[in-house]
Length: 140
Image (spheres, rainbow, N blue to C red):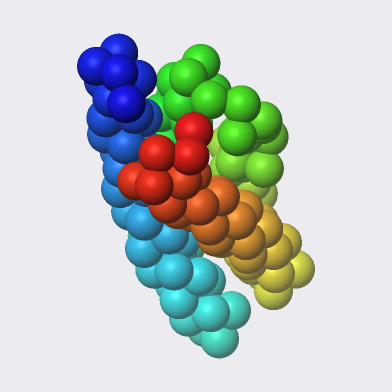
């Protein structure tokens, strides 16, 4: 393996690990938000709703950082073709509606957004772990 290729693979590994760290953090925040969402559905009030949305925004920050790392990876490898599944937007509209109307329908809608985001994160984690396996084997 040439020195240039070795440096590229090391960079890909570092960037992939950075993306994975953000994805695992996002997954943890999304799990916490989901748990708060369940509590919100069975009788949580304004404070639980606020905590849920704060946790969702923390997950969004981690997702944004993960997408940035994945886009950097895309410059170096063609194995990752798109990040659209991670472009989850926990909009202000969702938070305001959930706070104002604080009913089971808004709680279910928020839970569906959280579930969709968790599925996208799981898919991204699997794809990046495969990329890392290839990088460690030198198959890039």
